[in-house]
Length: 415
Image 1: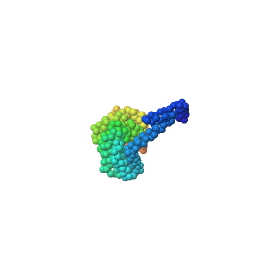
Image 2: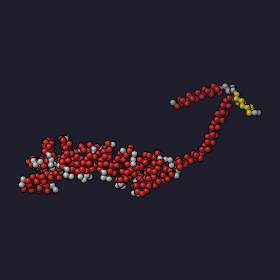
Image 3: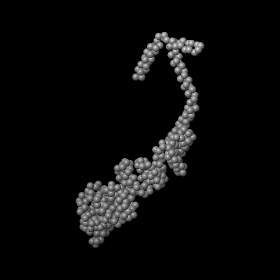
Image 4: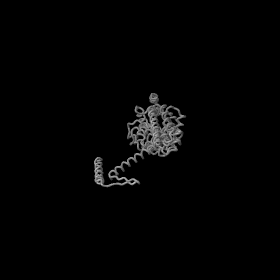
């Protein structure tokens, strides 16, 4: 296509030249007293074209000579910029290669070259990145004093340069990560609190906050952060559920009395209060703090849907109810009977119902269920031992010494 266009242009030029210059009958007369020069029109046109070309060449030569110092200065700046960029790339390569001393020197060299070149000082982002690379290398070298100096310089430069804001966010996240590696949870949380709201919701910031909260023994804050991470798909669903359960259990274990347990429970999300594992652990904590009635109150909503729960969760719920069976009321008997009918061969369910019936002094049915649970090796060892001890207590009540000795012996073998 371009060839066709050039051919058309040449054809047009040829047609115009043939029309204007073909006959060569015109004259051009130049007067310069006392001289007079007569030229053919064709020669005049050729002279004009040549004169224009010569003038254009002279103008370019003079302009090049005038601009030569500026071009030389630009070339020197460009060369120093290439050297600085090369030093920064070398620092990155050495850093990722684990040669932190060389990486620190290369980063310092890049920053020094830029500082010595006034035309390059406006690139604040480059300088901040250089200081961050130097600080990261010094962190790996365990030189915390110089690391903090480099980091502070990066912060100061980032505040003065609008173009370095993304680098400042990265610097703060790096500083928080390094503080966490130094086991300084308070400093980590302080740095994360200074982040803008949008940056603080990023996955990396939330991960750091979660680790810092756990290090600072703030399980409730860690639980809230873990929930945000799960919402941002920072974990797989199974890992998120396991982590949030662990944090909820940790928060409950930190409570020292029943009122503190209730306060922690109120801080939980509705999803946590519906989690059978969390509910069961909370009930066990209340039992340990002499509040079995409150424990049963928390267990009741989960027990109402026990038939729809997976087997593992039913076992956990049943063991929690067994621990909270002391003082259980008669209103629980229909619920227990219904649950037992739905899982008649489940040892944990038999153990829970047996403990509840024993607490209601229904000895015959309780003995049968506790014997079933005690002899089932699939049940937890602690629960089996407790079942044998309860059976031994029943035998003592009936003054059956042989059965009592047999139950105590079976419990001792499980110790």
